Image 1 (tube, rainbow, N blue to C red):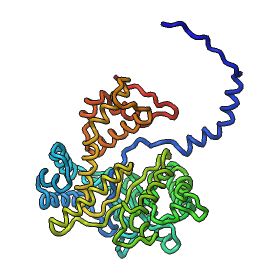
Image 2 (cartoon, rainbow, N blue to C red; image 1 turned 90 degrees about the vertical axis):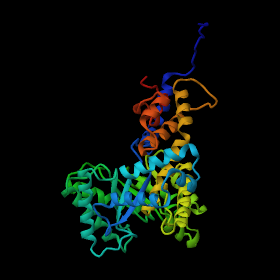
Image 3 (cartoon, helix red, strand yellow; image 1 turned 30 degrees about the horizontal axis):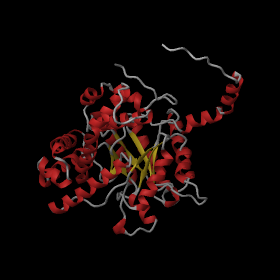
Image 4 (cartoon, rainbow, N blue to C red; image 1 turned 60 degrees about the vertical axis):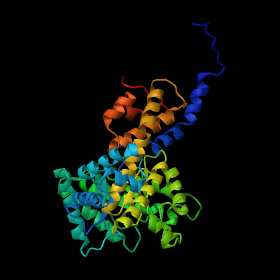
Length: 430
């Protein structure tokens, strides 16, 4: 051991204490506004089903229809891979995982829709029925991991109806066993932060009426208007909406077609890869970063139905859009038809399978200070572990294979993915 250097300082301890005192309010604000990702599972998609069409067997029906589409239009791994351009080394694995997913868990997040997709005649009855069916699904083990409703928005013409449907649905859940852990509410067509505040007041009133813990009810904000991105004063309204939610916002969901139409984009060009869509989602992404609010991409309205040729074209489009979104860190999107979910899972599984070994080896090298051809930083280790956890959660990766390549348990990965503020140096259990 070499000679130790003499260490000298010039400042009194009171200087550091004074600086810390001056930043106490900032420290508290950082902790409040930017708590980081919640560390819970994020579904890879949201499926919405009209409230008048939702049935007890809807989830299984979507899975069966998706499997039937594969049987008819891509009955084996080679034909499916040829449609999507999957490499030979991924084809069998991805195809097998897609079929297994459709049999086991065809939908990860389901929203019973009482907004644009609703065409029922008795909304009270349909909302009460949705509450009963969702409660029964969680009770008997047939529920999706996440389920809930999209009510009508807070605009004056439909506000009372939206409030009533929310009340009927939530009351129905309580009467049928309680609020499930996977409950999700989606507030559409938000234009002003004040509308978010109004919805918060509604949820507060419901919690108080039933003696629920304050903050028990969260919700997603659907971004479908230009005013939600850029306010009249030139500020990013979506950032203010997150603040207006007072910690209840769980997601920002991009509404492809309403937002495009709001900007005057013609119907033929309304898509999630339009420059206007990219701009909106980039603003959403920056506004949500670090807040614990997650961003979801929108959907495509090109349905994989009809001839095999048309189904293949629609599949290629959907697969490409999903892969594009994943590369841009939009890990969730909306699916509108059972035929979309085979390519949703194919895109997601291929995304994680392709990068799995490289990510696992980089994280292992970082954790073990082994070096390598990439100089990774703590923030990159966080991204690598988050990538692996997302792959495990959706079924693209198996816990055992991740463990084998990284030498890490799930708890190790969780600590790398969500370190405490100011502490990005994480060691493993081993």
